[in-house]
Every structure is written in structure tokens, then in C-alpha cells.
Length: 351
Ligand SMILES: [Fe+2]
Image (tube, rainbow, N blue to C red; front, side, top):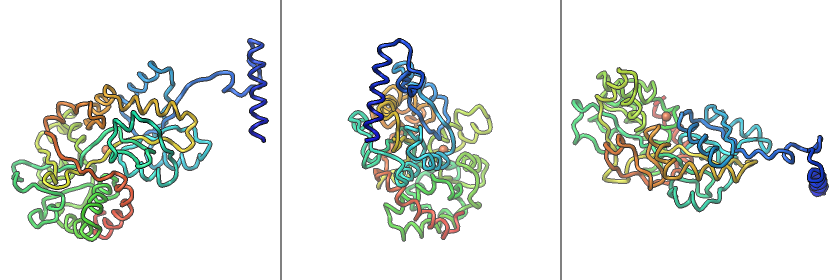
């Protein structure tokens, strides 16, 4: 009843507005000025995002507003704002975080045949609440003089004695490692994953520390023979303006594990539609724009990632690393096994 009264009042105000060229002073803003917009909460901080948003604005007239912060902070903010949140889309790296948003009830299903045609089923939420926008692989960066090609096989193999004192990795508090272990839980079972984490931790040349780039630098400096890293960090290092970083990047080679089996563990950056999105149609339009062939090419190239739209090609550098088989595990498994992965890392003393 309340809604009906409000609606009647709105109709009355609108009819007043058509009679007089002056907008009614007390009218809600929406009735006077219909600015089309879409609001994004983003964890990403790349120039290309801004460039693409500007192109979207120019071609559609829909203004793109971006709030940037750390992914977990954005989730908390979204949760606290509830139905009053202005956010339409949340953009983050790592499927684990997108699943976290879904599990907290912060997302709603998206209906778009275009998105469904462009983004493979394992790269989106089963109810289409989020879609991947780019893909990255978690691979081995090894020193070619200290590791022979026939030593390189699988993630599972890193648990073997052969690797004693030769491996390094970042801390387990990072979601990339949590998602890798979550994929091992999904593929090999929790018991095998527990034994694996323990053995790999014991094979480490040093305590887990630093980010992915720091691991590559340490391998280059001879502190270890092999590091577990995301592909795009090597792309960034090879193209860095910092010479030391470039040289470190040039001194390692990449290996895509598990090619004879399930394929290499992949992860994504992606975007989900918020539960209370005030500009739902515009949000879906933007996602459709970002998954178009042209946008995908640039979106992926800018951060040395793989496109999700198969019509777009990976950059020359990524192509030079060769085609590889991807683990086709549904990425929601990364989120579903996240808590278990954290527990296992704790038990393995992989801090
Ligand atoms: Fe990253």
C-alpha cells in the first residue's frame, strides 16, 4: 500500500513536470535527472581498466564510478551497506574471493546469453552470479642451469626428496596458494593434500616469505631452484623498467605442471553482480563490453593474462610460452575448499 501511494505521488509529480518546464522543487532527484551510471567496487588497479571504462562511457553514455580497495575490505563494505549499497559490480582477482562474496549472499544471478556464450562454465558461478574476466596459471619458475627438464612434472612431485632444499614459495596467507592447495584437495583428496603440503614445506630452501616476484628474484640469485608463481608476474618482470627485475625474470624459465594429467592450476580475476545492484542493466552491459573480443584482448594483454573469450588471443609473450592444458576443475571448488586449505597449511607449518 505504501509503495502504491508513493508510486501515485511519483506519477503526479511527473505529470506536473510535463505541464511545466520547471522541475518540481521537492521531486526526488531520479525524476528530474536520469543519469545513467554503474558503480564498481574494484580490487584491480590497472590503467587499462580505466581506459576501457572510459570507452564504455563514450559508447553508451553510462557513467562508470569506481571505488578501489582491497578485496576483503570491499566485501566487508558491501556487507555493511546491505540494501543501501550503491555498488553494482564487485571486481576482484582470485575465484576464491568471488566464491566468498557469493557465500556471504552478496551477489545475485546475471542473465546474459552473451556472457554465457563467451565465458566457459568452469570459469563462472553455477548460478551465473559472477564471471571470470581474465585467466592466470600458477606455474613453476625454475633456474634452467640447476633444474633439468626431465625433473619437471607435477605439483604433486614437489613433495619428493629430489626437491629437498630447492623449492621456495610465498606465505600460505596469500589466496593464490590457498587456491592452489584447494585445487589439490579437490583433485587428490584432503589426506593427500595434507601430506603434500607437509612434504613441500619440508623441501623449502627458506621459510615462506615475500610475494611471487620475490620468489623469482631468489631463484635468480641462487637461493633456490624452483618457485611457484602466477604467470603474469613473470610477464610484468620481463617488461619491467627496473633492470634487476627484468634480469631476474630473464634468468628463469616457466614450466606448466600436470600437462600429462589434469592440467595446470588456473585462477581468474572476475566480476560479480551485487545483490542490491541499483543499476543492474548497466552492470550487465559493462560485463558484456569487457568480455567482447576487442576489450578482452586489451584487458588480458595489459596484465599479461589469458583472455576468457576464446575469440581473443593471448599476447605474443604468453603465446611464446606455448599452449598448455588447463585444469578444468570448476573454480567454485577453490572457494569451497578454501577453509580446509588454510587448516592444512597450518598443520603443515607453512605459515
Ligand atoms: Fe596478483
